[in-house]
Structures are given as C-alpha cells and as structure tokens.
Image 1 (cartoon, rainbow, N blue to C red):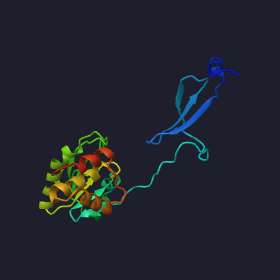
Image 2: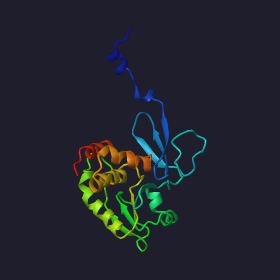
Image 3: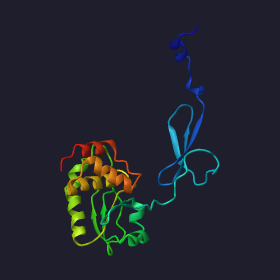
Length: 203
C-alpha cells in the first residue's frame, strides 16, 4: 500500500483536468475563466455565451418597485423605486434620503435630497448616522412632505435607518420598530452588525 505522502509526491499537475468556468458579473459582463494545467486562470470577456449552457447565473432583470409605507410621511424602498419617477409621483415623494454607496440622485430639480454614502458592512457604525437622518425626516414631516429612504436593495442600510428613526423619533423599542418596518417591507434584513447595534441602541 502506498502511503499518502508517496501518493502526493507522485502526483503530477499535468493530470489535472483543464477547467473552464463561465462567469456573469453583477454588471452583466460575461467572462470565461480558463484554468489549464493547474496554472493561473486567465479571464477573457465573451460576448455571446450559449443561453442554455447551464453555467453561471441569470440576472434578475425585474425592477423592485415595492414601496414600504412605514408612516404616511415615511417610505422605504430600493434604488429602483428611487429612480422611477412614476413611483415617486404616485407616492407623492418630496424628499429622498439616499444612504446607498455610489447611487446617483436622478431628480434634483423635483426632490429634496440628502445623501450619506454608507457601506453595508457589519462594522459600519450605522447608529452614528441616526440623528442626522432623523433630523432630515423630521424636517420633511414639518414641511408636510413625504420622505423615501433607500439604499441599493432597500434591505439592510435603509431599513436600519428607518428602524432607528422609529426608536429615536417615536421612542419605540427595537422589537416594535423592527416588526413595524418588516410589516411595511417584508424583504428587510439588516446585516448582523446593524441588527446588533440597533438592539443595543439607546435613543
């Protein structure tokens, strides 16, 4: 019987199968990664890939225009809704609180914007933004406006800001604030760091 060490010594990288992986990036670029003879992979762009190859993933092209009505003056949504003028007008949005990173504000002539570029990382101090965001929401409310709070997906950052607003502005407990926001927009899921920070937050 061969020992494991002998097997490893006798192994040749030339016996490795040539690999070819199709990759679709989030921006929709299609790439082909070739890994030959156990060496470094090469990445090349491929414009036409067979649709039925069964490799990679199919991007979800449908827009998320679902708007969570948290309060008559406070809405929660994704960037898709924030970029859709019909949706904004339907909900009579006057103010937009953009807490995404790198998402542009499309209607500066029609809306009052506040932008905070927040990263969706567990160690980002989300609670440090709550007072500034709450002041903007309250300002809109005093002007009888409607605020749409959004990030990229409307799931973690913006949801956390809205939960924090209910805790800070209305004195709700974390559990009450979370369940009310979840009811308005069922897809919310603050990342574990944000969740814990809000749980421990004392307004």
